[in-house]
Image 1 (cartoon, rainbow, N blue to C red):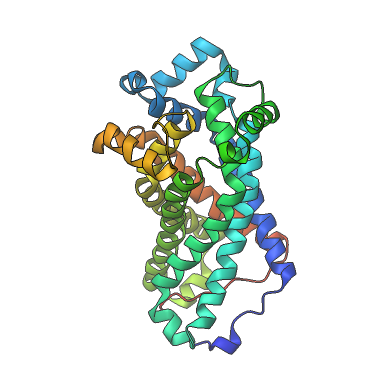
Image 2 (cartoon, rainbow, N blue to C red; image 1 turned 45 degrees about the vertical axis):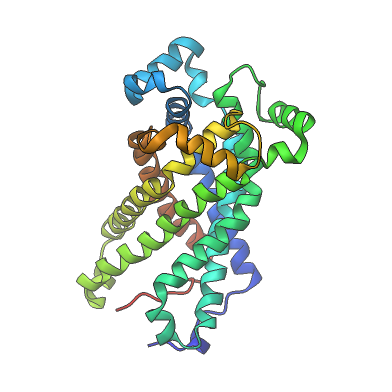
Length: 309
């Protein structure tokens, strides 16, 4: 079993490559999911659309706004998740290594791997959300009000001029409440899912797996992680949509969260969960697959592995 001193020596160049791979995979995955995200957000903001379902709401949007309506907020999504994705994946690699080193020994790290996965994901996501929040605020405003601005840039300018940084970061606490559980579900469940697969396949057999089989494992573990991420983060995702539309009254973000949670009730907090689970399973599985491909293509070293054999 590897010792702490034998952990991979990751340099600034490696973390730059991790950032580039994370940014690219999140840009591709979130950009491709914009139509589903538009439908999900509209269902959250307009309860009358819930009865139409995902397909019916999509048809309603096209009838009212044309096919371009399903691409609303694409620019904000691309910029926001490019930055957030890079920071999240590179940050997870960085903090997982630091927490492994802080364990004192590789054996201790393996014993405490769940805490390391949780801590690494949560810390990385916190810093990533500082980059994401302004773009996400503009995106939700554009999706909820198609007359608000013509594109991301004009939406950002209007929001900044009307409310400044306070308006752009009004959703920071709700975003943390949404994205940290999302990241924890994404990384923790993916790590544990791979661990369970590896327990059932011998090292010799793993070495002989075809590229197709390896891809299937990556996507399968990613889908499982995506379902977990969607369920854990759904309540905060619903509240975030409401806050960025201006609901919740006056006061701090925490106060607004409490008010809106009481108004929505348990069932309301999970409105749109079905479409979001589909979207998130696609997002997370494609992200892990693309991240691995891009990271390898860039020649980055492998990150820290502390899975139990």
